[in-house]
Structure formats: structure tokens, C-alpha cells
Image (cartoon, rainbow, N blue to C red):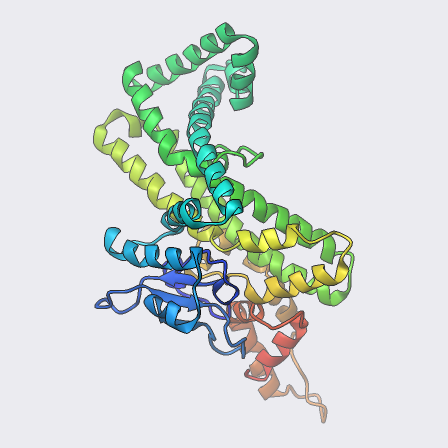
Length: 419
């Protein structure tokens, strides 16, 4: 996208149409408070002039007038419009995914229906696995405090393995964990059970991220993060062995992608710290506050990961030996990948990485320019260099929307020229 929006909500939510014209379409709440419809954004519709956004914006209802929406896409479009009233104007990627799955199950092709059914089955398993992961997380916490090595190293795989090999041993271990939590939180076993059950439902979509499960297997947002990490490794490994042009493109993609990942992990750490705080479980109001915090941070994580999965899938489905196709995907991602909104750039977890921004490093290599005629500093060129350093965030956002695999140097050059 060619523009850096102020917030994730202003950037909108990836819808998930299949039609080529609307494949990357996003939906957002309109900026005008009196509007009774969502807005549709077609990212980078007219390319980029490195100065302003060329996203195509229209009322969401008008999408069907702008292009043909056929079959499943037509129904998804209608359901999103109906959701405006149903959800009282609220809009987030989790809600959009639920709409998309319901439409896929009802009106998708055989592949859509099969995938939707599988996602729903996995979602139910996620809640069960999340309960075990949360329980194991508490076990590790109290195991360290109690200097109990058995508890300090417990995880979900250990509990699952014990359930198959030695159910009695697993029961004993779970009782030890529950007893430690009950004692630490000063509550009854019944209340702890009820609260962990509800907590597991809330945390299931992000479970592996929160409990630092490297498999990223529990929760659909955890699995999305796994795709992003695979994309990041794949692009970095591929571009490192090719031309300078591709290496620079890979550096920009890696930096941008890392910004979104770091933001998501930072939000997950907030959830983890709150979940391990016993005070949240002692009081009903505090417990509701914990669920509200999880809900809000979960939405932020979903916004950070939103729209990246399609890029990861595009990369992962290309044959490793197809150099031309891989180069084309690099160019496509560089042009179409989400630009980090100001909300993300201002997060402490991302700001700590700013000195590693490849665009800042390139601009920072230029100290000053001297006149060709004498030893005096060329004030005009020097002013342009300083202006570029101050506008590196805008340059990064604009580079992400360049058409094709253009050199990053071109963006610096155009910035120098006031483009």
C-alpha cells in the first residue's frame, strides 16, 4: 500500500474476495460519522507516485456496481453489508474471518467448504489445547517459585503424552498444578476451573503466541504468524543469494514484516503477563477486566497479521526452482504488502528497531555534499539530504508500493528530488 495510515482501523480489514479485481479489497468504517455504510479500499490501485496514496476508495455497497461479484463473492459482499447493522458498526479481522468462513461453508466451492469445515473443527480443538497450554503455563510459573523441576518443565505435549501413556500420572500432575494455582490465587478449585474454561475460549485464537509455543499450532492467529515467519525466512534466504537489487528488496520486506511481527508479539506479552497475575482472578470485576484486555489485545494482533497470509501463501506455493516466478512474487509483495500505520510505528516494541531500518541506514551513509566548484557545502543538496533523513518513514511506506522490482536506490533518489 502506498500510504501510511494513522491506525489499523483507518487502514481497514482484509475482506477475502476471490475475484481478481477485488482480491486485496479492504473494508473500513468511514471517517464521516454520519455515513451508514462501510468504505471499500482497493490498495495501490493506480500505482505509486511516491507522494500520495493511490488507493481506490468507494462506498462498500458500490463494489457490485464497480465490478461483477459472482457467486460466493456476491454473498460475502451482502453479509458484510448486513454486518454493519448487526455489529453496530464494529469491524475487525476476527469478525470478518467468521463471516468469511460461514459464507465459504454455505456458498463456496468444494475446496472452500472443505477448508471451512476443517477450520471449524480445528477451532474446537484449539479451545481444548489452549486449556492445557494455559494450565501448563501456570505450572511452569509455580514450578519455578516452588523449585519443583517437574512443574517447571511441563508443557502441553507432556500432558498429552501422559494422557496416553499414564493417565494416572497426568491426573496427579494436573492436581499438583491446580493445587499450586488455587493456593497462589486463593480461590476454590471450582471457580478456577470455570475461569480457566472461559479464559481458554478467549485466548484460543492466539494461544501459541501467548504461551510462547514455537510450533504456532494452537489458534488461527498463531498459525497466521507461523505463515509470516515462514515467509520472512524464505524471502531472506532467497534474496541473500541473488543480485544487490533483490537483496535490497528483501531487506525492505524483512524490515516491514518484522515490524508487524514484533508488534503482535508485544501485544501477546501483555496478555501473558496479565494472565499470570493472580490478582485478576480474585475479583469478578478484575476478571472481567482481564477478559476485556485479552479481547482488545487479540484484536490488535489480528489487525497486525491481517492481509499478510495471502502474501505468504503466494510465496510458499511457488516452486523453489522457478526463479522468474519467485522474482515476480518478490516484486508483487514489495508493491502490495501492508504499510505499517502510525499506530504501529509508535509502539515501543517497533521503535526500538528503527535504527535497523534499511532506508534509514542508506540515507545515513550520506554525511554531506560539497559543491563541484569549490570546497563549500552545497546548501541545497545538503538540505535535501536532511529532509530525507527526517522523512524516512514516509520513504519506507512509499517504497513498499513501487511497481515491479525497482531498486530501493530509486526511492532515495526521488525523495532527494522532492518526489
